[in-house]
Length: 379
Image (cartoon, rainbow, N blue to C red; front, side, top):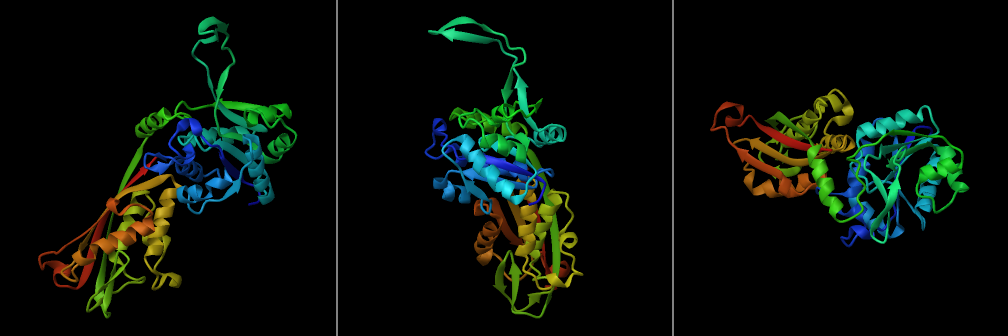
């Protein structure tokens, strides 16, 4: 990339205090790895052009399973060393600005990212903070030994944003034991603006933080539903494509693509839940490149669009309406095929069939219809 803003997700730590047998960034949170939530938040923001994670080299397999297709570089022995490795990689790509964020903060909001980006328009650095409201004590031997003024004290959060060349130079000559990137930036003489943080921007540190994070996620969960309907007529052929499975039949279905009526209905349901139109808007039938196209292309595109906006598919229910062929013997294969395309469990996918009691065009066996409902969950 040349210019633009990158998100650097710091995920090389061991997270031993959180327990669980694997680093906390790869443990499940509300059904998805912690780092998957974090990456989805930045990928969904229109002001972020690129995401790069810094991971421990021993975690390559864990990262590939948690964030398939995502880019990473190996971290160093310290947090500062890991960040420096990521910054160097982004500098080589020509990034202009960077948001450095802890992978263990999966609840970062779009509004918080926007506040940091806006402050970066006017300052060399910007970071979120929360003003302290509780009284502060100094303790000694289990007793209160005094009070500490809390005026002008802030609880630091991430993402911490910087002009990339400036923060890379600060790291090159800075203290490798610095608490965070703001400390390095200030030591290098950079001004760092404070923007309003977010109480829900929890950093998962201990085992009990997972329960708290799930409670917070439930409070801000965004649920969307969409429906889809499609029809294709019969024509010459010896099979029909339904949910990506070739079902033997004396006739085929006619259409600009492979005429997979069920997969089209599911794709339209996802587009509908996102308020993104339908297949025809994204893949116009007037465009010859889509003639005969396999319908998994459309479904993968709709699913990718949902993921980019921070939504996961919770469940799908599809009903195929026809007299023949019989769908029941192929339903499990259809569910498995859809699960593979969508990247979700087959237990979240329903495929069933019904007839129209010999009424209408499906009853006269002139074609097949399908309808689908989809639920998306975003955070």
